[in-house]
View 1 (cartoon, rainbow, N blue to C red):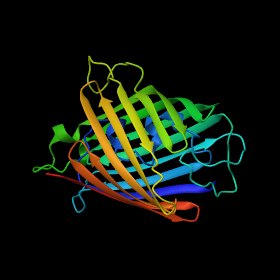
View 2: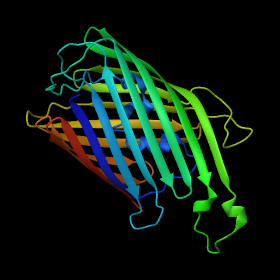
View 3: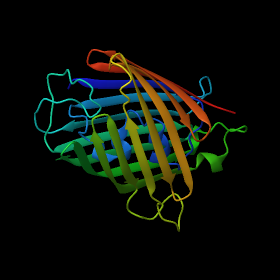
View 4: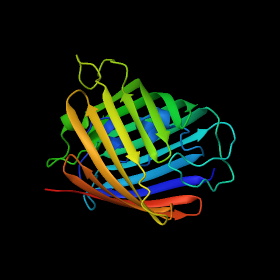
Length: 287
């Protein structure tokens, strides 16, 4: 496996128990695409693994932290460029029709914890100059609350310490990606099955809808710009969007600036180190 990406990020906003996978994963759209669009599994035409860690509110005890790991591979063998026309320098390149992906996350926010597993299957087609990918994923999530880790003003409250809850969720995701030279976009639906919401008795799990796209501007051989847009409609309640501009240097190192609709601005840097990408991301609220 020749391509590995690692991200260490410091974010300045809170996660909430019960928000689920969408809030955790959508903060790191660049790296963990198989979480929100299963059709991306194998779309890069070479094996990819990603590992990221984010920490919020540095210096605050039990402040939120999240670890995400994901990877995907295209079955088969063929020399090719990636869908963004980045040179595939690895010894192993793949180009069969089937892609497989796997993602895991662990989120801790004081007494609240969330764990998740995502397994993706994608089938890729060549349509003249276009590449079409169709994907489906099975997901399993656990939300847990442990009252013994509270830090109350008056310790020893039996009502608080007795709070121990754990909920398991199983669901499915659908996705599609479409790409050609310079363009990459897709649509996806998460939480496809309207199952009972165990966190909110009497209600059902609502779907999340995602539309995303990017285009590589041929601005020069040494520096290339890639604007991108992400639209999310979550739980049939709120519409969010991210607008990003990324600059590539020699089709390798990159710098990106992202504006989030919740009035936050993110800056990320990526450095190529042989077969590995090392990235750093900082994000802060705008008032």
